Length: 507
Image 1 (spheres, rainbow, N blue to C red):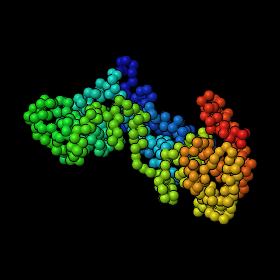
Image 2 (image 1 turned 135 degrees about the horizontal axis):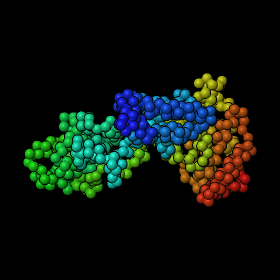
Image 3 (image 1 turned 180 degrees about the horizontal axis):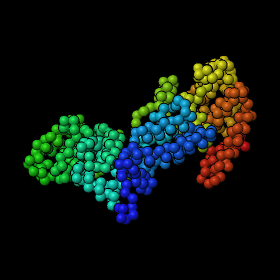
Image 4 (image 1 turned 135 degrees about the vertical axis):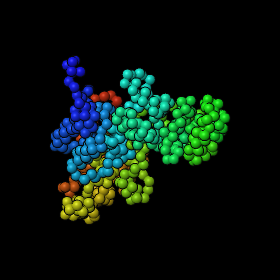
């Protein structure tokens, strides 16, 4: 190297930079060189954005755009330590909540809109999905030189027919010759994409080898000769009637020698008894639904590996969890009924494009719209009573439904629109979540209700409301939406469909 004019690099004490990423045998040094500069840059960006009055959703979008995007390239080519991940999580939490205690759990925020979340970034899942998208690239039909080494290592140590699958469990000793980044991918895949199966089709589609549910002595198994002879899936062990095949049938079908008879006995004994019963009871009806190819199973749904890009892998990790937000549990207990949370959560996104209004309703749904009752407990106000009637504690249900002042204001609004709009009867539930009955003008009615609630909330400081002021507010919002809608013909048609029925009421 010296003769060529190239500098010799000691990779135990230094790093070499390739395409913007530092590589070294010194893992601590590599992590520091790769991430220290980026994290410092992220912190400086957030210092500037904290000065702006952003909504919670706005902050989430800023974090996605200006923070997590800076480490995507690094996550694709190098391992990321737990310390870095924890630090990124801390930065995100402090930015979203202004260095205060979070009001909504992290598990709620990372969910999709229809499940009560705001699509906040699950940093661990994001990094895992980026790393594991390597699997899709490795097994696509396009050849690239970089595939030679990993495919050789996989074939040498895990068999030529090895598949990444849902319940992968590979002994660490088999991965010792793999580069550290590949080892990290195997660990991430095994940890993040394990999923129990109960349907006959998903059981029979299970890969036999390195499967955490198919074990001998608490260890997953791998019989290389059987795998090389194309015996690789649970469904191949059973006949068309759901019964286990006899050894003679298997031996002839997969060209196995008699010396593998004992291995065959071990294999069928390691198949969970519950799987055998399920397959037998099916009588072979699901045989044609099996997939004997690379795939992932999540909640008994099968996903082909060649379709699992980083976006899909991220969705699989977060969409199917059973976590239920505490606010949903509270409201179902309060109203003593099961609620259509998908409709409730999506309603504010359907009725308005204004982020501030959406976040106002989001606070109500998550029970973090702090009114006098709670503010009094926090010692922020001198009285828990309603800002208008002064007769009852101020809660969401009281201020939007029970208060005589707001009741009168709502009554005036209904009378104004009575010739054009038929407002459903306001109830405690609809006052909180909106009208979900599927009215012909549901979007407009719920938008007006949302404007009404936001107006009430802003008038708390003065303690008075004015009907003409509310009417003017609705007209202003209608006019603003009209201006925005004129950017495209389709948007203008939607605007007209929504507002034309009351265009004379709110000019």
